[in-house]
Length: 338
Image (tube, rainbow, N blue to C red):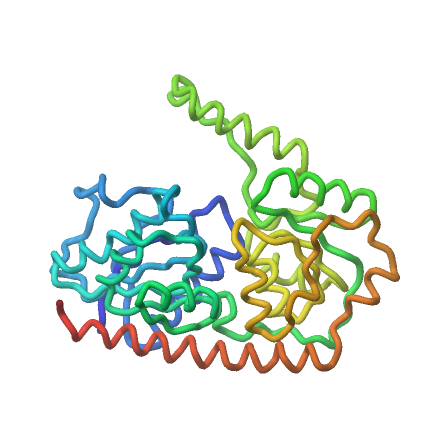
């Protein structure tokens, strides 16, 4: 059995529904193909400064890096470079390192030099693969891990109402929440947790208090009508709607999974647009501005056509097959010790 250490585990990301599904599916894929996860390192900690928390590398056969949306603008974002440096760690410990489930966008040469030490790269869209090729690296394309397994919903189920979710951009989230209220629609952010007071031991840290205060004010500004304890409940909520209006990448993937009509505002990189171009939907569901009203005419014109449903079905089938091929291939990398 291949023993896998996962880095950039995003499941602890403030109860983020999409990240929870990603990690569940990624671990399921590993186990379905003869691997076992022996170590998980969270997305929000720098592994380089926690040597005493690293595993016994003699008990690890493969280092798997879950890229998700971390690897962008590497010249100004340290988190991207932190993940890329895992290639050198693997070389030093004679353990293969693979990147999976990643967007690549607007990264500098230094990041790709480090990714060159990885044994294989798998990205979430063709645009990311093209960026890797521009730096001399090849990457397989398998769409986001939220789509790796079938969800038991169909396009024919009864649906009602409009659902709004938030955005990675806080000002956009506030405007989406306002439009949801104005439209009599429900609003559900992509995270299940509310900001908590950091505790008396931590209030001596001005940075921690500021972080909590910003989160608290955001919650007061665009708090949720719905907040679920499990990602599965969020998926069911999305699948019950006639239309979703969102600024979140993983809300869009869940709309594809449940075949729920949607419109979107782009995220912090063009990853939603890149995904939908791969699906074959183009840019037709992209909003450049938040609409002033969401009425029956707006909802009706955005229902999926039969052609769109066919494209989504084909994409989901292809993605599931690709996810299993990817899992089998990366686990086989464990036999190639650097």
